[in-house]
Length: 220
Image (cartoon, rainbow, N blue to C red):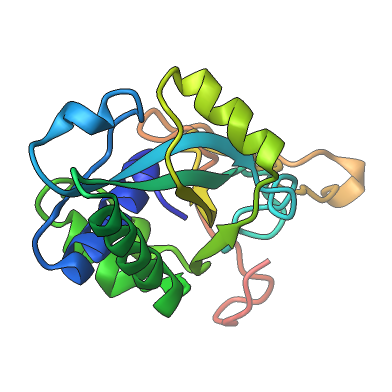
């Protein structure tokens, strides 16, 4: 599980991987209508355009939850990214797009060490690299109609692009879960248990031990 910086951590890790593969051109993370003018020269833009709930983890208890407790549900996410390349020369843009796609295709998993290296400086509070569930990157095939609608919504001229999804990103709920009350047994002669409150603690306190036989190590 991870904290609320997980989405930003995924973006930082993908951006770092693509930048390392390109070896020079910048990688921006802005909306497509701003991407052409974001920087001068050749560059690739990675844009998070949609988030969905992961169906498999939606109703699952967080890993490692104590037995009997009712922890707060996870926020399991699937992130959808759009990848596009920009250049004054269209052939160069196609080369950049191919290299960026290969960077995401080569290793379909974001290892914890790669995430940690990408977030150490910009997101020191991120703990996504400690998540037990693998963060996986996969190509997402969209219909031509979906692509046309998406670029129309961006209010910018269409460019050849590729869509990817990243799952599962499990964000932990920091609120404490509900724990069941302890089970108390009926006392001798049908009497109920007697609790001795203590000002220093909200829990019952042990005030003494009575032995059934003097000197016996067995306490009743």
